[in-house]
Image (cartoon, rainbow over all chains, first blue to last red; front, side):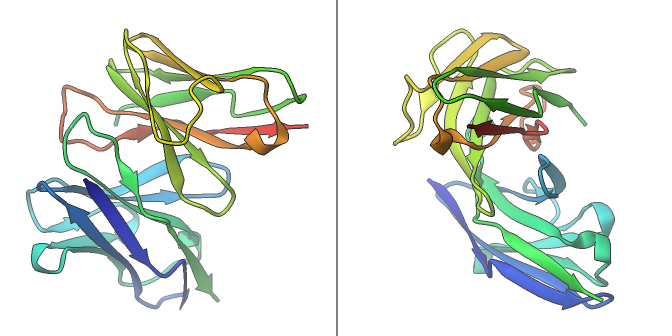
Amino acid sequence: AQSVTQLGSHVSVSEGALVLLRCNYSSSVPPYLFWYVQYPNQGLQLLLKYTSAATLVKGINGFEAEFKKSETSFHLTKPSAHMSDAAEYFCAVNGNRDDKIIFGKGTRLHILP
Amino acid sequence: GAVVSQHPSWVICKSGTSVKIECRSLDFQATTMFWYRQFPKQSLMLMATSNEGSKATYEQGVEKDKFLINHASLTLSTLTVTSAHPEDSSFYICSARDPTHWNTEAFFGQGTRLTVV
């Protein structure tokens, strides 16, 4: 079985500051890990994914995440926050191609001017 | 990337009526689709896995007679909320994966905002 835990339901950072959203996973098989972003009343958009290749994954909009097996973590970072980054972010995991994707509870990112 | 289209994007219905939501994979064939429900300011909760040509697999606590899922073709799955009540008001999202690219992410529809009055 797989699960993800996102630490912090709300995170606030100043515009231009580092963004760090935390995600820890649990999986009985080598996991595939994802970060999705959701804007109000919209579906989900993939930011990046880890599929057992490079441990440092670069995504869209300047985001990146590093897979650390020893820490069972897949934290999302962005060097410099922009106002447009304000949204809900979901970490997700699954273990097999036909398997369901399990989502964390989400972290709402607030950008302070 | 692949496209999943969900329709309608929003719907308002009277209590006691039924509402059908469609989920289509536009440029790939999806043997499996997933239906999620999202309450305000909460995460996505998986409701069921829709399997083409067979019965859907429902998550624990989800009423299969309430939320009817049909996956009649490789590009279309439908979710029908039967005898809707105000507590069924929510944001429903479908997703699908391209089986020919097995390590890819799931692609999501735009979501359907259901309001039952």
